[in-house]
Amino acid sequence: MNMIEGHMTFEPSADIPVWDVDPYAEDVLIDPAPYYAELRARGPLVYIPKWSVLASGRYEETRDIFSDHSRFVSSRGVGLNDFKYGEPWRPPSIILEVDPPDHTKTRKVMARALSPKAIAGLKEEFRRTAEMIIEQLIERESFEAIADLAEAFPVAVFPKAVGMVDSDRRRLVDYGAMVFNALGPDNKFRRDAMAMAPDIVPWITGACTRDRLTKGGLGALIYAAADDGEVTEAEAAMLVRSFLSAGVDTTVTGIGSALWCLASNPGEYEKLKADASLARPCFEEVLRFTSPVHTFARTANQDTEVAGLRVAEGTKILCALASANLDPQKWGDPEIFRVDRKPVGHMAFGAGIHGCVGQNLARLELEAVLTVLAETVERVEFAGEAVWRPNNAIHALDRMPLRFIAR
Ligand code: HEM
Image (tube, rainbow, N blue to C red; front, top):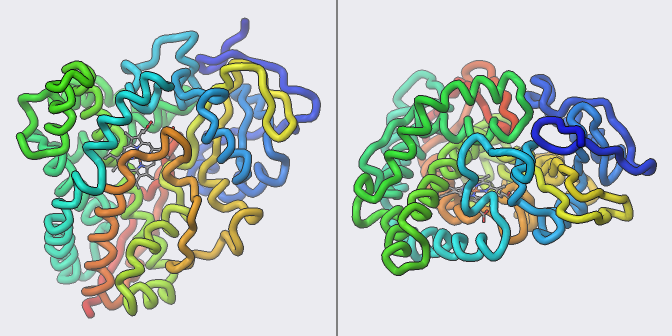
């Protein structure tokens, strides 16, 4: 058995197109649209010899793969490593990287803690924080939108919502980036991310224990499930860790990308200003258009087929969610950003049983930011060049100087 990046190599069937591309090359990660267009054009599945994987970039097949958790499992890892053949770098997530029935149990606990009812009380606080941050930014000639707003807002509201006693902005943001880079091959981005692990991982682990959480937060709801015997104390700590792996860097990216979309499309910002109730649909369109999580993998757990093409047991399939969200077979004018599109069925939160369990919270955060923006800012303008940051699973801005002109 030959291995590459922790999974088995394989020979694809003759009818699957072979494409000599590296989806994890820096230029592709920074500007992926040409890669997505060609991936979709070449076929429903493409074989990439560089990493011995299949890749799926069309909407229909990507959705089908994500929706079928029995043939395409998560328990063998949602990155390149196949957990069947080696130890992952950290104990696997007990929600993201498991299948039913294990998944069913932990998902229930997380879904309850993140239900619309559980998080409804956070709305006012989110709004007040957005007002405070945006008010200060309007006063400035220009500012660094990723640090001063995209990071500042979630880091102000999210650890507090979880009930964390310890909060460390840098470590919280970097932990997410690290977890997502770890899903790729052993390239520069993964190695640089892993170099942070000895500092960040013990801090994160320490911050998730019961005694480091306040009584009224979302974290306490997870520990209440441990008290009721639904999960163990150790599992509760792992689930709180999942809040931090998946809930910070993603929303930082969502806010940064929303600001980029609005600064790049002043006409669309006018529409949002004219009707602030478009804040929610606007965020959905930001998600479709920019897909913060660009790629997650699945592993075929049996010999099977996708679109009539043979897929052998053990095959890793890179599911390019961002490409599915730009597929012209699914979306009219996918390259155009429209705040009122209402892109029902986009893949930015995934699909099927693993579909983002934090999506209500992400929406609440973005709704607060976009509503306050629409109500108080006349124009959102670039004050310098926006620069994207390569990451093996996240498509995020690194820096973006902006200017807010007051209404
Ligand atoms: C813009 C923000 C967000 C985006 C784009 C996003 C994206 C995603 C995607 C694509 C998945 C599916 C993973 C898969 O199927 O393998 C997912 C799952 C997940 N997300 Fe999010 N997410 C966001 C915000 C959040 C927040 C705020 C939280 C926590 C409060 C969170 C927690 C989770 C968890 C725990 C899972 C695993 C669910 C499961 O496996 O059942 N996410 N997210």
